[in-house]
Amino acid sequence: MRVLIVDDEERFAEGLRNGLEAEGFAVDVALDGTDGLWRAREHAYDAIVLDIMLPGLNGYRVCAALRAEGNWTPILMLTAKEGEWDEVEGLDTGADDYLTKPFSYAVLLARLRALLRREPRERPAALTAGDLRLDPAAKEVSRGGVRVGLTARELALLEFLLRRRGETVSKREILAHVWDDAFEGDPNIVEVYVRHLRNKLDRPFGRASIETVRGCGYRLAPDGG
Image (tube, rainbow, N blue to C red; front, side):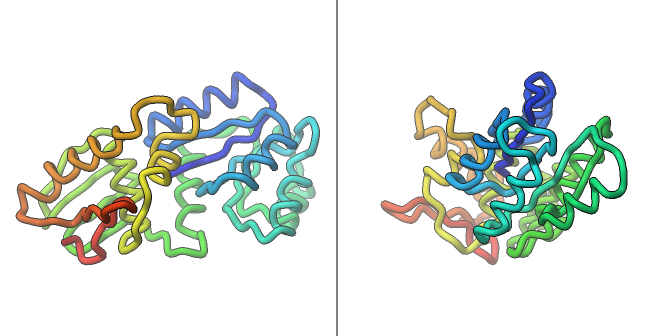
């Protein structure tokens, strides 16, 4: 899934980006509140990790502006500040969760997964389409109860398709959520990874769950094909 990190501590932000990308997320970073607000307005994110103490606009103001505009992307606030009133202000401004630095990276991941499940669109712990099942937390995929091994990028692509099952998604949407806007390679990489998923999840089981919608993109059948 695609995440925006807004934090002015560049080393911390880059470290968090690297960790999340290793988990299969596509990650963008903004180093001040003004840029963070612009990115959140211009791009579709699945979650935002937002520091409070930021140059330009602080995290409270960024969060309040997004909520006032009807942007309900889940927001996890990060701060070095302690005290219950900071937490109260962050949550009352519209944040969905709050984490004080220093924090456990495992806890951050678990809270991000929880936020994804709480989006207006259904976000169950395990994603299914017929007998195709993906557990994002455990990074386990099975078809008809048979475990299937996927790479991190294949897992990310499958997760995106499962979360949008039944919908036609364009190659551009896939690149934005599974890779990121900074990707400068051949956009046909999407076709390569779709073929990988078909070879691992469909053909060995006599299925055809990932459909090509000519001129539009791809669609994962709700019933798993």
